[in-house]
Amino acid sequence: MSNMKRLEKDSLGSISVPENALWGAQTQRSILNFAIGDEIVPLEIIHAIAQIKASAARVNNHLGLIDTEIAQLITEASSEIIEGKYNDQFPLKIWQTGSGTQTNMNVNEVISNIASKRLNTPLGSHIPLHPNDHVNRSQSTNDVFPAAIQVATIISLKETLIPELKKLIGLFHKRSKAWRDIIKIGRTHLQDAVPLTLGQEVSAWAAQLETALRRIEINLEELYSLPLGGTAIGTGINTPKNFDTLIALDLSRKTNLPFETAANKFAIMASHDGLVNIMSQLKLLAVTFLKIVNDLRLLSCGPRAGLSELQLPANEPGSSIMPGKINPTQCEAMAMVCTQIIGMDTSVSMAGSGGHLQMNVYKPLIGYNILKSINLIHNACKSCRKNMIEGIQPNKPKIKQYLDNSLMLVTALAPAIGYEKASHIAQLAHEKNLSLREASNQLNYIDQEEFDNLINPKFMVGAD
Image (cartoon, rainbow, N blue to C red):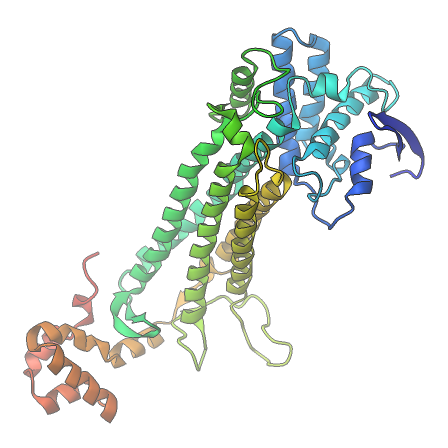
């Protein structure tokens, strides 16, 4: 950015703006007044606002509020923003006004100056597009910004996280099928339990993720109702009749998503329960992933002094001092991501409850945390799949060793000889370091042939 400056004006007066910047006075004031942290408004929100600006321009033109040339300039500039051509022109921090007004104006000013640049009029002249009178026509930040969060959230989920989740679920199903005949010992309370197959164990992870995915997809439906047309507080002041319905229809056509106007804009503008809800679904997905990677960490711990039933890929050295050490680093990275998302959900819940009367003033935080969570868990999911799940191998000798030595196989004797006698066999085997067969022979509660018929792990794992 050049050190040269130009003067821009807004309702508070003049302010110096970098000469070549496409933003204007209100953006510059936000840069100066909110130099807080490093968190920038996500580009997904910027691009969604630009999409709304383009739809608003088309609807305003259709309703006779702006002429065709003005509408075309707005839509062309908005399209270029959506394509990412001006990503560096949106520098504002999340920690700004709780409505997101400065970011809405940032987009309005950039669209205005793109048109000025195209027509060789001075930057900041607002010729031919005025940021408020033309670009922001029939809109308020109060309906645009939350709508943009909803649009950005839906698109991000549908284009990134949901497809990646489906890939991982498919991979778990593939592993479950491949390992359906590997019988292993189960564990409850981190203690030996009755057998199951490795395929069954993996099937639980796939089912958990499928359920989490369904929750996300079902609860996504609530975000298709948009507050656009509600303007300042939901009454639709300064908005023509049918603008709300027409802009939702235009957005729906352009995105191929079933957007509609909200039945009650007061509710959706004063609170953001739908966004809080979808963040909760992301939290639940994080909880699911945290359980899965903790299972993987336990099952792969070792290789000599742990369970070591699964062998994870050796992606990198695990220690700066212990040669040859390999750690479950993908599990650890995912666990940190999940922990972060659980915390971000708490923040969004508090933000969602912080609305007062007709305005919730935590919008940037809500949008940032949701989109950051989607991005984090998508990246972690992809990393786990490619760098760990695809390369996991079962340690069959170790699995068989644990199965053969398990005392909990005695559970299969309980229907035949009763719980107490089966307990005696298990306790004797444990105390004397005997096999179950040896302990059973000593106590003579059941003949050897029946013992062998009952203590057969293949009959204990249930039907496929």
